[in-house]
Image (cartoon, rainbow, N blue to C red; front, side):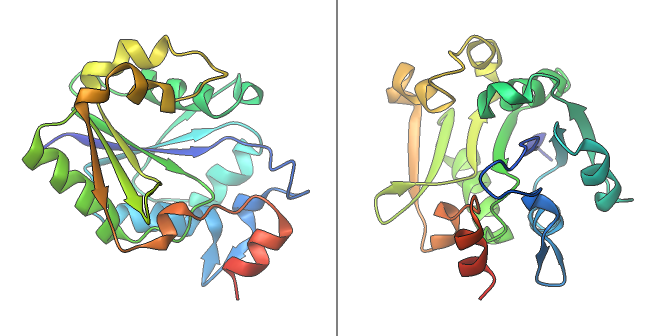
Amino acid sequence: MGNNWAIILAAGSSRRMGSQKLLLPFGQSTIIETVVDNVLKSSIDHVMVVLGASQREVRDILGKRSLQFCYNKEHKKGMLSSVICGVRALPDDAESALIFLGDQPGIPPSVTNAVIDAYSEELFGIVIPIHNYRRGHPLLVDMKYRKEIEQLDLEEGLKSLRHHFPEDVLEVELDEPGILVDIDTPADYKKATK
């Protein structure tokens, strides 16, 4: 079996929502539980959740699931700071990391499996799911790029990695609009829970 990790970014403070969006009801549970459970139902080997704002509440709600956690004390510096925190927390033998946003409950396990399968078969170091020509999540990065990720500009974010290594990027077209949908505002939440 491979050693593919999910890094789930759950450190944000949900400024635009006005309350901690990850804890909002979604389906039978909450947004963050739905994200985590979808990942756990996929063929991913291990899951690392990056905590920051509301760390105790998020950790408590995830309960006894088989997860590992890291705390990003610099979470106010944006998403890439949480990616770096997660990557640094992975063991040395991690093969790849799939980056998930904690506010994307609409990504089914089949999407994660398709990204992992493409990585296993095609030997590209960066795999990005796309839908209607737009890039979504989860983004998979081979851990040969561990050092490069740690040195990326926090302002530019993870997407700058693909600009540095364009020849190593594989885009996988998927018929799943959920890979593009994140929940940032009350209007997004209303739409997602219709």
